[in-house]
Length: 212
Image 1: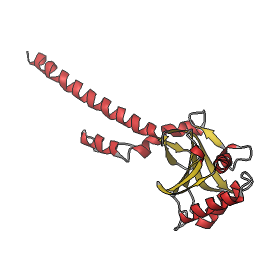
Image 2 (image 1 turned 135 degrees about the vertical axis):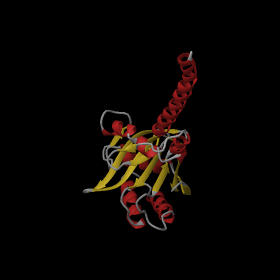
Image 3 (image 1 turned 180 degrees about the vertical axis):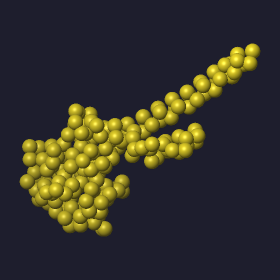
Image 4 (image 1 turned 60 degrees about the vertical axis):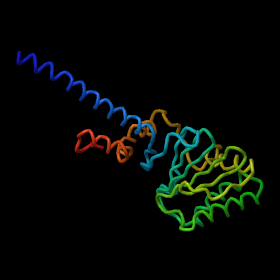
């Protein structure tokens, strides 16, 4: 009778623990899937942004220096995240020089340079995020998620996208989910994601440490 009682008591406890574990692992999987890492820099990119889905990742290099990682979204958004700090003048010059052979309207390129320069009063240190939206006929610029301006010009939008899409693109853009490092990097997003709410949730369930 004692053994039977223990077995009867153990069953709901086992089910309760199993459900808790399932909840934790589902939460971990959901968060890790939401952030994908560019493998060469270790920089994370949101899988979803402004209604768009991350499609490609790349790294702009200068010699051995990884200057920034870039994510391309299927809604025409491009997100640049600095891996190496540079001055505002250098960043503006680099993107402006990349636009000039792709856009025949010099005034629009100049407006873009002025807009970007105004949005980088402290330069572009490591960790700076620059977002450029090319959809809708206006090139919208945001620095660290703060809008700094928009230039209404469809040719300028197309020219900016071509910095990363045409045959002379400034870096190789690798499709997310393809075989290779980028695909592997999607799974390594777990360590990045655990620093958020999931870590607190796991602790609440009685775990003193979650291995990254």
